Amino acid sequence: MNFRDKQRIISRYNRRLDQFGDTIETMASGTEARRAIRFQIMTEVGMQSNDDVLDLGCGFGDFAGFLTQSDINVNYCGYDINPNLVEVASMRYPSQKFEVKDILNDNYPVFDYIVSTSSFNLPLLHQDNYDFVESLLLNCYNHSRKGVSIDFLSSYVDFNSEEGFHYEPEKVFKIAKSISKSVKLVHDYPLFEFAIYLYKDFDGWSEK
Image 1: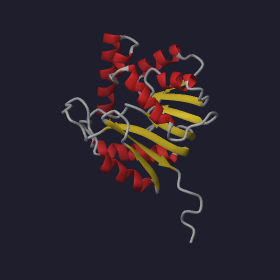
Image 2 (image 1 turned 90 degrees about the horizontal axis):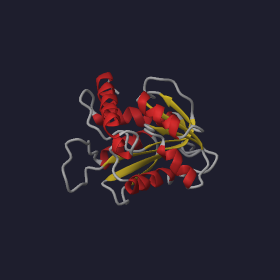
Image 3 (image 1 turned 60 degrees about the horizontal axis):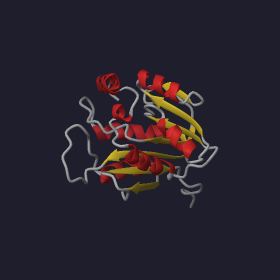
């Protein structure tokens, strides 16, 4: 992500944190019920207990709490570019691991699954959103053993949102297919959003 966009986004959430404290309003992700739908979609990529899972753009780390409540006992790790959000996450879930990290600029290990929800829906001012998504998906794919799950605001909406960036699902699907032959687009849940799953190419796919 362009440095200026990164700093702008960090500042945005710092302002919201000052205003709303460690509540869901800071994350600007809607109600807890809507968030629970998103979290469930993330797990349906194929996540199982004992998987190593990276929660990218973890915010307050509430996906870790959802996994525990759902009896999905993974080896969880949360990354976020905002140190203040990571500090709250570490206090809220002290048994989990959280780090301040920008995966496009920092080294990090391989996980079974990399997931991210409501993290990349702001319009970028200094970089094309689709170019960013291509770099993001490729990076995540290369650091996953089993798969990647990321959600986005959809362009198929009945309202106009100036604050959010609404992605065309077809464009994101095309980007994903340029990275992996095994891709799933999920656009049937009751939110104006969609998720893209990328799986590792099948063993022997290229064999003749």
